[in-house]
Length: 287
Ligand code: GUN
Image 1 (cartoon, protein in one colour):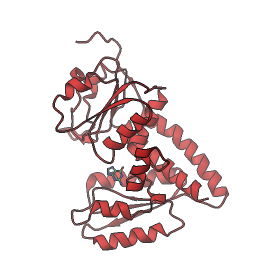
Image 2: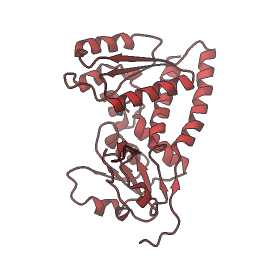
Image 3: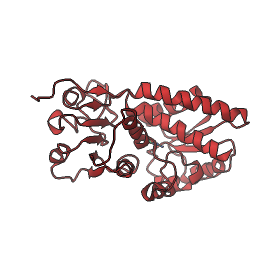
Image 4: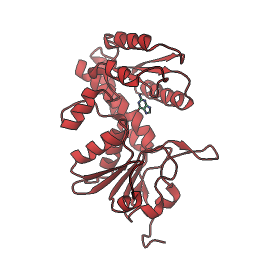
């Protein structure tokens, strides 16, 4: 039991995405009037079912906002050399402003080599070391879409991070590490937790903001959350009934938190929205 009475407010990622995408669509029209259509190339290698859903949603998001988008699907036996050659061609294609290779790639392909082959000017995923370095040092560059979307969600509730304790659970290059840097940039005190963290609950109980980005159900439960904390759920998992769920025990944690993001309809749509924003900004820069 907790003394906290009203359940958390939901941060609606679908509604916020709709608002942001309306602005994107307008800016696309303005660019088109100048003869430029923002273009995104999405490359998928192999048949990972989750990846297939993600890339379909990314391409759909592009179409809805008036982008030019190309989805290139390759069999799982595509060679690394062939993929690198394709990226090289897209780097030089003036109709393409963003290049995204959906991860994971098959084991015989070196993901780092692929990421570093993408021109930093078209690295709308923000995974290139040039983008990561820019984020780390406070220079301008593409910010990875999922943590960027999380920051927009905090902004949407007017949350001031200065002096707050933010706990990030997960240390991936895609989410955890860039998330921590963005929170730090806004003057939060940041703790990064991971699989070797000794007492996760002791740390999350101190947190004003918790970002769960592990990829495992029920990583965060109500007993681990300080009353009034803000909880962002980056997880994308299936429960035993096959239903989409996040890393957070939503029903439990919503009784304790002040704000919480749902899954689905939370961070997921925001990730795609920020991909559109990055691609649009790449096109605007090229203009
Ligand atoms: N796999 C999981 N998330 C992502 C993402 O944001 N971008 C790419 N390219 N692959 C992913």
